[in-house]
Every structure is written in structure tokens, then in C-alpha cells.
Figure 1 (cartoon, rainbow, N blue to C red):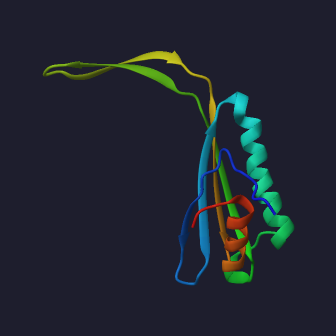
Figure 2 (cartoon, one colour):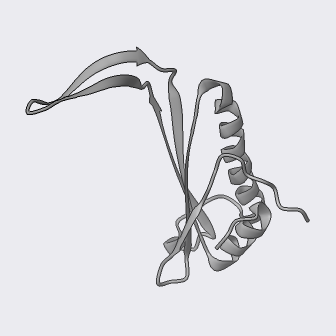
Figure 3 (cartoon, rainbow, N blue to C red):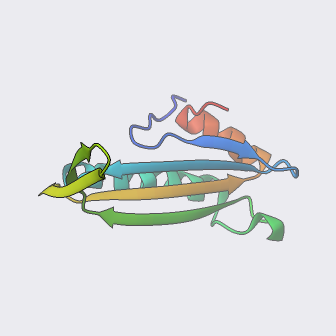
Length: 124
């Protein structure tokens, strides 16, 4: 089976003393790419649900669990000037298009972590 490539999510991995793994990813997209980012997050979660059932707390016997967060931000560029002895001056510039950042945290048993790595070609 070929691993499914991820284009937006770049997971960092950590492990606790109980052998449970934690995959964290954060991705930000402009409106033109947002649907693809959402679809990628959903694809990973759909895979986890199909392979390991519904998410549930690991300390209550669950195989995997998930936390999702998102924020929409509109950035305004600032013109920055330094005046010797007077510090920095900040002047608002043009407002950019809004971006949405989605954070995904997946925790799971060793079996879940191994399967997730294989399914999406993730590094340890």
C-alpha cells in the first residue's frame, strides 16, 4: 500500500513515559488553499476513525484521541522605522487577506502511531 502524501500538515512527534505517541501539526492557508487544507485534515481524521474507531481518551482505553483548534487572522503589514535615540516607529500599511491556521494534535497507542506513520509516510 502506498502512503498518502500530506501537503500541508508537517507533524512533529513526541512520546510519553507510557509509550503513547503525540503528533502535532499546524498549517496556515489563504482563502484559495483553505479547502485543500481542510480536506487534508479531514482525510487524516477519517483514516484514524476508519482504522481505529472513534477517538477516546487513552487513559480510558482509547486507541487514539484528537484535539483541533483553528484561528482566522487578518494581518496588517507595518512600516518600521528606527530613529536614533527615539526607538522604533510603527506605521500601519496595507491589510493582507485573511489566513486560517489549523492545529491538529493526535495522540495514540504504539499501534496507532506505527499505522499513522505508515499511512502518511511520517518520520519518527
